[in-house]
Each structure stands twice: as C-alpha cells, then as structure tokens.
Length: 195
Image (cartoon, rainbow, N blue to C red; front, top):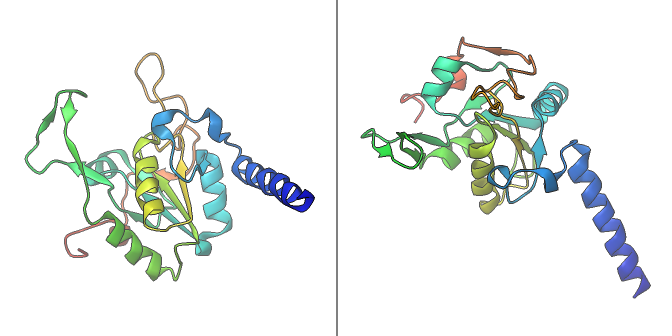
C-alpha cells in the first residue's frame, strides 16, 4: 500500500512538472483555449522547441488559407493545414457577426501525411498555432481523439489576444517579434495540387 501511495505521489509530481515545464499553468488557461491533453506553449516556448528539435517536431499553422495569405505566418512552420475554413457558400454566423467557418474534413489526413513525410509518429511533438489559441486547442482535441500523444497548442497564437482597445497587440508570435513573413513557401501550403 505504501508503494502505491509513493508511486501516486511521484507520478502526480512528474505530471505536474511536465505540465509546468513549458511555463504555462494549465489551471490558468481560459476554458475556450483548453485542450484535452492540456499541453500548451507560449509563442516563445514553441519557437525554442522548434529551433532546438526541428527534426523531432511537426509545427503546423492551422489558420485558414486566407489568414495566412493576408497576415503572414511563422517562418519555422512545416505546413499550413487549415483546421477550419470559411463556408463554401459564405454563410453568415449571426452569433459572431462574421462568416461561418466549417471544420476542414481533410485536416487529420493532411496532418498525417506531413507527419509521415518527416518520419514522425503520433507520439512525437506536434505544435499547432492559430490566430489566438482557440482553434489550435480544438485541432489538438481532434488529434487527441485520434491517438496523438504530444500535441501542443500555442496559447497566444500568431496574432495574440485582444487588448481592451480591440487590437491584437497583447501577446502572440508577432508581438513577441519571432520570425514570420508575408512571403509563403508553396511547399508548406495546402493547394489543390496536393489534395
């Protein structure tokens, strides 16, 4: 019985250290940015991991093609694989006063293809980034349901959270002055020729 208690304490301590090693306390993550796996990076931590272990990490921008096209993307991504896209018929979402977005039915297949190209498995590190951390968490949930083990959501996203003035200038990849560009690398983008 003592061994079981000791094991539980060691396991919980190890888990907590792993969750906090990234510097993000999962308990402090807003509900809409939480993922099932509870794995998060700040933009700086994501950049550091990708720079340190590029061959052992798949870094995916899950924003729509339009966002990447007009707003730029981190230079270090392996791919842009949209988790959601604007509805084909430009349906309007009354709740958010914006165009309705739908889940990309090919997301998991395209991600699996990119993972295989890097000779990585479902147990290797996958880092997902979206605009502000909401969609990357939903994409991480989908991958968790499919058996992926180490899927991290960049909590602040590419553009960061909104300030009281309604600007995305609080945090995030761009506001951390991490490498990004408007120039897109075709090999990293999803095009009809690749589908």
